[in-house]
Amino acid sequence: MEDLLRSLTPGVLGVLVRRYGSLDACEDAVQEALIAAALQWPEQGIPDNPSAWLITVGARRLIDARRSEAARHQREAVVAALTPADELFAPAPGEQPAEDDDTLTLLLLCCHPDLTPSSQMALTLRAVGGLTTEQIARAFLVSEATMGQRISRAKQRLKATGATFTMPPNLHERLRIVLHVLYLIFNEGYTATSGPELQRATLTTESIRLTRELHRLLPADGEVAGLLALMLLTEARRPARTGPDGVLIPLGEQDRSLWNRTQIDEGCALISRTLAEAMLGPYQLQAAIAAVHDEAARAEDTDWPQILVLYQLLDQAWPNPVVRLNQAIALAMVRGPQAGLDLLATLDADERMAHGHRLHAVRAHLLEMAGELDAAYDAYEVAGRRTTSLPERRYLEARAQRLPRAGNAQ
Image 1 (cartoon, one colour):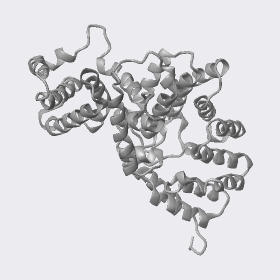
Image 2 (cartoon, helix red, strand yellow; image 1 turned 135 degrees about the vertical axis):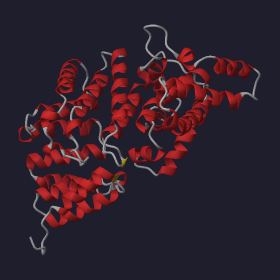
Image 3 (cartoon, helix red, strand yellow; image 1 turned 180 degrees about the vertical axis):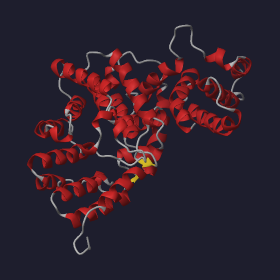
Image 4 (cartoon, rainbow, N blue to C red; image 1 turned 90 degrees about the vertical axis):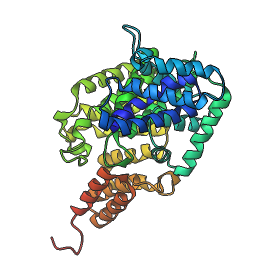
């Protein structure tokens, strides 16, 4: 039920914002509706139309809160109280459900040009992605308090602009930030930053759906196509990423027969066509890297020299520490682990990596490749303590424990 509520939240919020405005007030109403559902559904059963149920409860919460403000809200209260939920919110025959359409509009509203890029991303991850403030803070490598303030200011600024809940006439002016938000939501779904589960399929599925919708609206845009291809090629590996007990399985050890060939074929065809027709961008480069991995029948067949070249291009087009981490792995596979470790050393002073676990995890892997087992053990231990993802912590601790160490009886 928790997954169901999480998947319904963006659509419900979109409907309420379209009808009543005020993202802040609507988000509060949705939270109250979710609490009511969590309390009532286990005893009464999940309604036939759970989305309409949430919309109705949220709408009534909003109407109750506004009734004293103006007489016109009394009319809305009567309509909401007398009209059955299925009739009030059902789409016309043959029409897509309104909440599905509203999610993309909500995404574009949160990416309003009057907001700063960081505020746009944070607000969208909260409203559309359904991520917690803590999860968003980790994605941005800042404290939870800082992110909470940023989201609050973004809501206030959006309200002050008088923005309306409509599809903007020019998608391109918001496209860059929209793509990055979808990218972050997908990443959180594919590898959750915290919690007992490695993956959150509802987030990856919704990210792919919204990116498909953008691709439908902007079929000639290379980066939209590139992001969609990247998502498909990455999501295709999800069935093989964990064992029956939920333990993380790294890419090189996965059973590739479990990969989704339909998604791989679609992603490869999409990126091949895009690379031939559009100007090269970061999402296309990442999709090309994913395609090289997915096209290898076995891990040892991976074309690492090609991947290294693609990462070098990506580092020039989109320099950031995560790209550098992955580039170090590719460099180690081509030129040896010491070359990768030397590249990792350039990130030691990067504040964005100071409190996370990924730098230590990659260093542990390369140290293990280099035969420096004691140092690798220590790095795995540090990475395991720093991650807030339980599956990643178990994986890192297991990697450390299997290493023979100097002075230990074997």
